[in-house]
Image 1 (cartoon, rainbow, N blue to C red):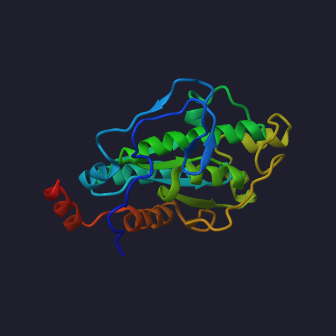
Image 2 (tube, rainbow, N blue to C red):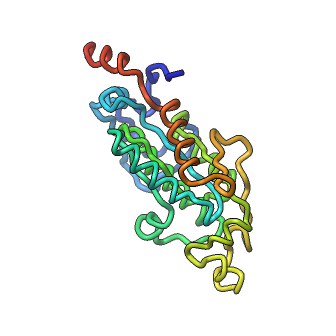
Length: 240
C-alpha cells in the first residue's frame, strides 16, 4: 500500500520572530540564546521536492548496541538506494562526533545533546527531500523520543537488534575489549545502559540474519513507507 500525498508541512510557515519566545520544533521546545532571530521559509516547499524525487523525505533512525550492524546496514542500504535514483544520505554517529559534535563526551547530558543535534540535522535533510539513514547507538528512550518529536511523522525508528554477546564477539573497533579493561568509561552495554525500543517501526535481527537479509528487509520497508506512485508524481507535476 503506497502512501498518499504528504499533507501540509509543519515547517512551511512564514518568517517569525524567535527572540523572547519559546520556539517550537515539532513539539520540542527550545530557547535560543541568540536574539533577533527570524525563522525563514523556503520558496520550494517539501512536497515539490518529494514529487520531483518520486519519494518522500524522511528519517530512518537506526539504533542498537555498538557492533550490532547499524553502520554496515546504513551504508549498504544507502548505496543500493542511490543506484536506484533515491536522494539518500547516511548520518553516522562517529562521523558527527568527529566534527559537529566534537565538543561532546559520553555523559548522559552529552549523549542527549549529541542525539538532539543529529535529529535537527536529519530534519533539515528530510525537509529537503532526502531519505536520511542515521546510525546512532542512541541508548536512551527519552533521547530517541525527542529525536522523533523533532522530526514528526517523518521519523521511523529501526531497532538493529543483536544481544551483547554477539556484539562483543564481533567488536570491530576493539571497544568492548577496552571497556572491559576499564579504558572506556560509560560504555553502552558494559558500564552504561541501553534501553531497547518498546515499539520500533522495524526490527532487524542481525545476530540471526545475514547482512543481505537485513538489508532486503530494510529496503522493502523503505519502498512501502516512502515511495510515491509514479502516476501520483506525474499528475502533481502537471498541476504545478
